[in-house]
Length: 362
Image (cartoon, rainbow, N blue to C red):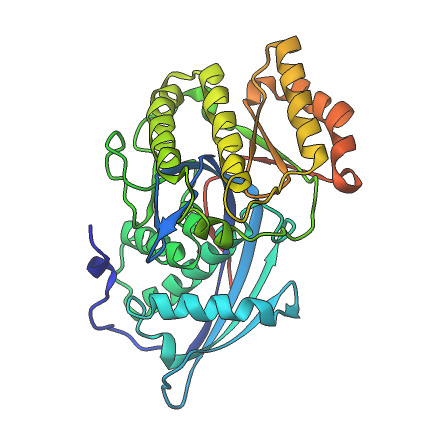
């Protein structure tokens, strides 16, 4: 697979104006992607659960410009307000994908997005946002070239989304999604996310993810900056080897239903991610005191009950609690009685593994 496969031939149709809309989920990585090289390619493979309730909904209106320019023309609203701080990222995204969507300079776009969860707090908001926008743009391309097959549509949407935010390529399709080449995962690619190629054990279907909102504020250090700090990180190569090895171990566990092994790998990955942040130069800490209190409480609960409650973290202070549906009643009681006290204003989100992005009716 090469990038050239995503460059379209001549479009067969023409359209003056219209509106498309997609709702795309966030995702939570089990094996973490941390470190990249141009153009938005991962230094190590990753695998994630696609979520269901944590979503970005994006409405994209488009209208033909009287004269195609040498620039991109768009307006941007987020949560109903203009967000000038977001515009440079969209501009860069359009620059990266123009080769693959040559109609971009022919139209003026009105982008209107909203989240069901706090932005920039470590719940992969860029993943859901960029995948939703990529899917909207692919819907326009489908209007210009209706012969696009669903499989090709999804593959190109994931490819494009990656160029906006790496983890966004894992938010197009549902279930378990792999991004990055790995010898034990047929079809895996650095260019896009693909669904886990093997049958997943029943215990990992309908898996829950309760997100404890320890800190709903914006992160002090963005993920983009964090990825960049891996370029000169003294432990980077060992970290990339570790991620590959952890993914190798996780693959059979997901097929056999090894919940205990799953917990060890996933928590190891979460702590390794934050260890990279704490040992970069400059170094930084995104965890908060209540993050650590939750982790210790989870360990104590698991030791006392033997239940399969697993924590993981993205690049932020909030804690994702992963657990199987068959144990959800007792675990939810523990969350409500013991862990909600550590959340900002008692806020948390009950989510679970979802089916991927959904096109909204116009």
